[in-house]
Length: 178
Image 1 (spheres, rainbow, N blue to C red):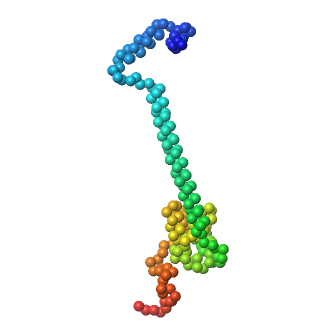
Image 2: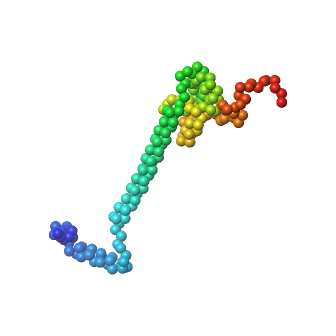
Image 3: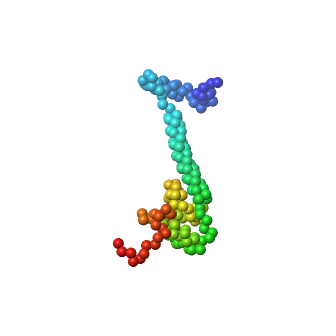
């Protein structure tokens, strides 16, 4: 197989003088380089840069995909928490109004739920384009994953003892003076 130079000479596309001049130029280049130095090929350098840039773009795309997959997993966890822990509001007769996205929303709940919502024992969450009521502990778990899913969760008051208050059955008279 003849070299490209020989093929060009044979076809008449190059002459002997130009071929000799190119050979001499390459020979001079090799002689001028210090021993042990490698001749840098520009095409190889550009190819290496292109590979590095492509690897960086791929890395960025993979990070973005991982973030999206993580976000989907978190949403699935929130949906599962709400599905397993939501409270039944089918017996709701009292309307409870709250604000979500600068709009006043209304849902019907029973009287005990209204009391517990106002005391911070229950919370309203927005998942799958629907409002659901869950217990405070579940709402806190949801808030760890995504705070925007919890719409209403009032802070518990320090004087709110809970269900285990020993004096819950006794009413405080209005005219009591300390």
